[in-house]
Image (cartoon, rainbow, N blue to C red; front, side):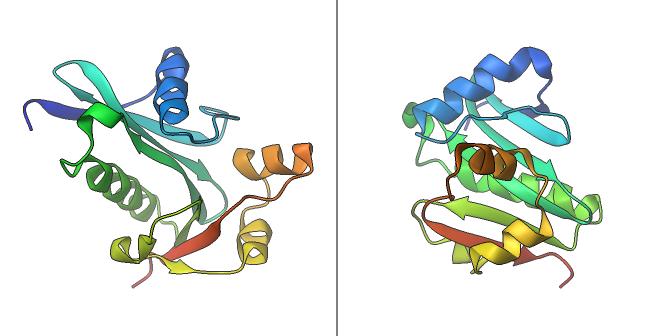
Length: 149
C-alpha cells in the first residue's frame, strides 16, 4: 500500500473522523471529546481510515475503527486496531473494551464479555455517556482484550 501513514487527530480533524465513521455506519457521538485519543490513517495525504480510544482509569474503550469502502481489503483496518491496542498498552491500560454490531474480534485477541462489565469499568467514557443520555444500550456484542498478558 503506497504511502500509508497514521497521525494523531486534533480538534480540526473532527469532520474527517466523523465522515469516515459515518461512511462505515458507526456512531459519531462524542468523537474527539475530551479524554479521548484519535488517529487518522492517510494514503497519499488523503484520509482512508480513523480509530479512537476513550480513556478511563487503567482501561480504554476502542471507539470505532473504520476504513473507507474504497480502501478496504488491504489490511488497513487490522493496522488501525492494532495501533490503538499498542497505544493502550503503552499508556499502561490493563484492558481495552469495544462494542461491535458484527464481526468476530477474537482474531484481534478480544473475548466477549457482558455489557455490565464495560459499563462498570469505564462508566464515564463519552460513548457510554452518549448511550445513557439517549436512554439506549449499545447494540451487538461487547468485547474485551486483556493487555496484561
